[in-house]
Amino acid sequence: MNVTMEELDRFHDFAVSLVSGAEADVTWLQLFELWRLENPSVAEYEENVSAIQESLDAMEAGRMRPFSAFDAEFRNRHRELACSALGRGLVLIFQHHNRASGIWLGGKMK
Image (cartoon, rainbow, N blue to C red; front, top):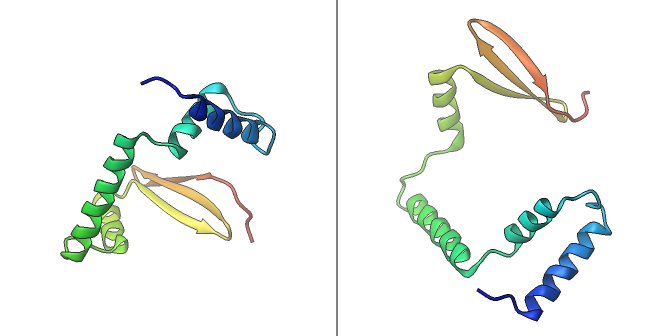
C-alpha cells in the first residue's frame, strides 16, 4: 500500500503534537506504535468491531460471568498472584511456597 500525502501530513501532525508536548521523550518505534494504535488499518478496525460484537452477543446470550466470579475462581485455583490496593497505590503480592512478598507499583499511600 502506498502512502498518500494526506496520510503523511496526518502522521506529521500527530508526531509534532507528541514530540512538542508531554511525550517529548518518545522513540521512533514508540511514535510509530502509538500511531498504529490510534490509526488502525481497515482490516484491524473490522477485526476489532467483530470481536466487540461477538462479546456483546455472548453477553446478551448469557455466556458471560462477572469478573468477580472469575477472579475468585482464579485466585482459589492458582493462589500465586494477588493484587491489593493500598490507598491510591497498588501492590502485587506473590505467594510462593507459603511465603508472600510484594512489589510496590506506585501511587500514594494513605
